[in-house]
Figure 1 (cartoon, rainbow, N blue to C red):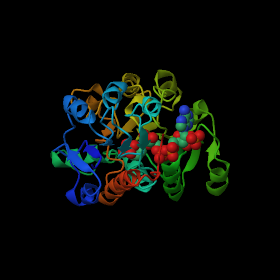
Figure 2: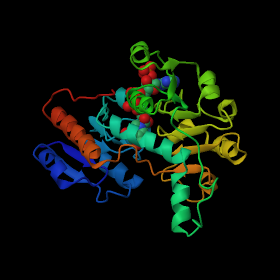
Figure 3: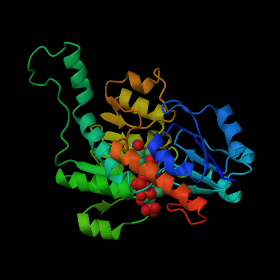
Length: 320
Ligand code: NAP
Ligand code: GLV
């Protein structure tokens, strides 16, 4: 008997084909709508393997039902959607998809930084809505990226890839990280600072730490007050790392200049969310890794992990 695999989103058939040789594959029928909780709970009860995406919350409640489950392959580098401790206690391995998305996510982070600095979305909307009436001396003006100071909170794979881009823009790069990166400092001339120092000195603060118990609410009222009034906050990590209510107040009262957000506490972000009412916020629907090549590479890693497990081999990129 083949083991059973449940895939929580519709994936392209050509990606799934090799898995059909080794698994009984069952798959949620939509690529754009999340699998409903009751369906997930029903499917996980008999699955040996589970393919998740970041919006699938694999909590203890799910794992308690998953009496056959041996492996979860998460199509993301971040795995805060999975209770890894509870999975480990139950002998369920979890894999993720690092590295293949690093450069694509760094591209997006830098694009969002630039779009926010120059309010590209605001300018485009003005053009489309007929508000481009003439060339204005101070019309559609933003702030410079070239030569500015970038503070990266979380100098991991993606943080370092963004730093390489920033160097091409002659930016001074400060960083804060759990551990010092001496080699990176030597190679790129970036400088380690404590978080308050980074917040006080940076023109752009970029959040790239994972979402964990330690980083939840890492940027709140106190931290936003430490930033320059001209500073821009960019979050491409996870929404819960920044307190959204405090961010709204900081932006509304011009304590900081602007924010660029690819991630939100609740995703999809509700359309009546206060942050969406502000003109100095650039928002994106969590598209950091969204290039075709990268998403295909992430799928391939999940397929490989599932194939390895089915052969009794150690899957790559285990997080537990
Ligand atoms: P990574 O290589 O693991 O980098 C994370 C960095 O954060 C590491 O250098 C780590 O320090 C540091 N860190 C962890 N906890 C910290 C803390 N409490 N205080 C300070 N630094 C801390 O991960 P990555 O591949 O760069 O990805 C980073 C995150 O980006 C992911 O976890 C995910 O949430 C997010 N992401 C978002 C998108 C998107 O679509 N928007 C796409 C991909 C990733 P150490 O070096 O000491 O471990
Ligand atoms: C996306 O957010 C990821 O963690 O890969």
